Structures are given as C-alpha cells and as structure tokens.
Length: 287
Image: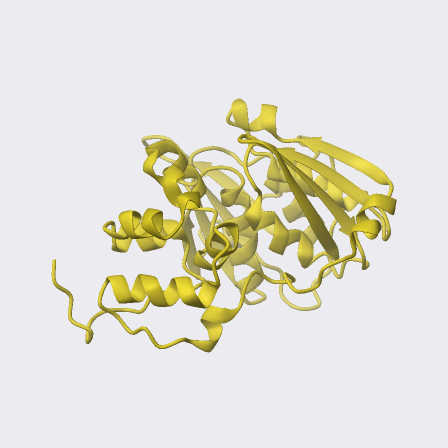
C-alpha cells in the first residue's frame, strides 16, 4: 500500500513496538533485518506480549542501536520523514542516572519478588512488586526475578527513587536489582491484596461522566496496571476515569484507596468489568 508523506504520521521513539507494527506490519521484517534481537518478534505470542510493553527507544537499547537511528530507519522504510527529532533521541526516563556497580552490590536486599510463577498462572505481578518496593528504604534493594526484561518498571520505579541493575540468567529468566537512592515523592504503602474493599462512588456520582476512557482488556500483565496508573497521573483533579477490563484488578484497589480515589467496579453484560475511578479535587482529605 502506498502512503503519501502528507498523510503519514512520523514514527516516534515513544511509540510502542505494538503501535508500530499495528500501523505498519511490513516493518516486522525491517526490524529483524536491523538486529537479530528482534527475531523473537516472529513468534506471535511473544510479539503480542512483549511488543505492547516496549517502546521504540527501549527496543533500540535492547538491540544495541541508537534510538534516533532506529526511528530514522523505520520512517525511511515507510517513506516518511527521516530528519532526526529531538524527542526521538531521548531514552527511558532515568536512563542516564546510573549507579556504580558497587552501589548495587553493597545495598542490602530487603524484599524479593519472583514474578515468574505469577505470570505462569496468568496473574498480575505489578501489585506484588509495588507492595515490595514500598518496603524498601533509601540505600536498600528490591530483587526481582522475571521471565522477560521488565522495561516498563524501570520508568515506574525510577520515578519513585530507584535505580536498576539487570542480568539475564537464561532466555526466560531475568534478575533485576532495584536500589532506592531517594525517598519517594508519593509512593503509597500497599496493603495485602484483598485487605481493602473497593470504595464505592458517592451516591450523587453513581453515573459520573467519564472524562477519559481507556480499554486494557487486551493488555497483558503488568501493562494494565501501568496504563491505568499512568492515565490517573495525567487526569486533572476532580475528573473521572472509566476503565474497561477483563477482570477485577484486586491489586489496584489498595493503591486507589491509599491515593484517596473513589472507585466502583461494575460487571459488564457479555463479560468483563468497567471501573469508574474519581480523582479527588485538590485539597480533598485522603483516606
């Protein structure tokens, strides 16, 4: 299919690989030709799982390429603009703030999470990871084992004062040591799953108008949790987020309670649930 440069939106480093391939499926072969690291994308299951979690910038780093160079090559392959964009050159947040190896070796491990059995059972590991991270103090470490490199966590925990050191022990076995170097700006403690019931929306707001609606039904763990929390961060105080999900996100509820968000989960006809989350206005007391 021929596309004109006039109606073509340039590929950015912030796009996920899933977004790139959904719009330009022919770029699968381009990626594989650029680096053997992308050959796993031929596997439909791996492509479905990992491509939704990894941005172009992160994929470039995994493949040993410069993000800006990869963006230019992808745009060139679809006949788009190949001029470097300032935003494309940026990698994941916090990537430049590295720690010396000794800092990771000296930090005592006070929390350990093995996400592999959770993922094998189809469960969401993000809540368990965030609960463990909340127990880690400055100068201490969280040790994570995962079946793939948890790229989204680097930004999420980086915003909470962590730096990471990653080792691949086997094709499906990754070990990541997160060391907290600064106190979190706003990292609520996570109660145990199920310890807190969802807080209903007040009667006057039983049918709120959703300012933002997102659908995480087709996403795989831990992306639903990451996507929801990211949408809530961008939401203005006093606004409401409507989430379409395939199941009740039990690990999400304690985080919403700790942040003071009112929320209600309703079953949908035909399966799945919808979650209404109201962000408290500025100055409203938290629970």
